[in-house]
Image (cartoon, rainbow, N blue to C red; front, side, top):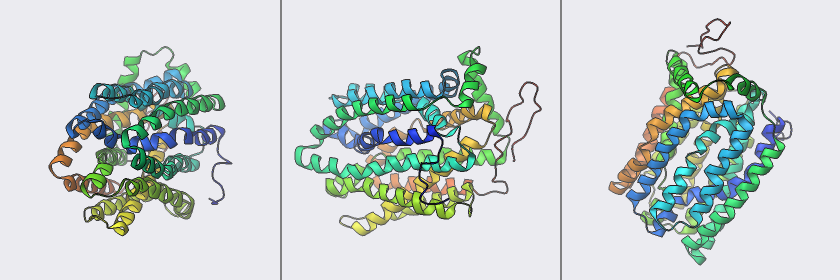
Length: 425
């Protein structure tokens, strides 16, 4: 893969999903990064913040249950449009005016519908592309999101000058309208995928409860195959590790006493690391290593980064830089390869259902992580980051095994007029 090839030769759906992503990323990245600090500045306690995050995860699980079915019935393009409005446009505006736990909770409950977008959007962006292009599409969109982190220090500067709450209220208010523009542009320039058209026709007469049941059956069938079992556990553990990391900004600012400007540079360093990973590391690895191998060593890098973070002390900018590079680059590469593997490991007819089923199982397991993170952080902050390192380590172990390849053209469950097939196990 030549480095100069960024997005120009990708499928139009992928190109326009990438081109419009900055409208979300610029505001969404800063909003998510400063979310806990914002709520704490308004007056919410650590436990209240953790309870809100856990409530979000619980409702997200309910949306995740129907994500595959809704995506198949509505189509990838239409589901992405409507649920992006309910999960980001409206919540951003609600958060902009939030003054108490109930307003923040309302925004987070609406935001839980993003679980449907997590299925529909990635299918819209990648489904009509070739298998070899999918890691590049996942990575390109993640680069855009992380590169938006370069602008987070600007928010930190204004927060230092004008105050945390006023700055973030303006950012959220403007961000809500920017996300609406992003959603409208993407909807206009993309088209429904071929598999999406077929799924809408196939699911037209299927009731939603039946579709949800099919999702559970598919995940149950996957358990019979060793490679898929390890893949699912790796997905779950790496996701939980990411979810637990919600108090990083608070720890750096309140415990280690780093300035808001320094704290604001963390996403910027992560963005540069992601860009380097996309333009240098991924092209170098292309053709040399499998997606599974890259996911494995990316998990190892993530683990090492968080272990080093445990030794971080005030004013140690060098170690903070090293930790940030590892804990940004590792997860970036891991998620790009991991998601591409999950997206392409089953037959196209089962793709949306299987992807949603994996995310549903993940959502169930991760429901208490917000509250758990708050309790651990309140009792001993470093214990939380040690747990993150341990989860990445176990996830890396899951990538080792005798069978590590997946066939994209087989079915997990028998279909009408088709013989039952098996995935490499």
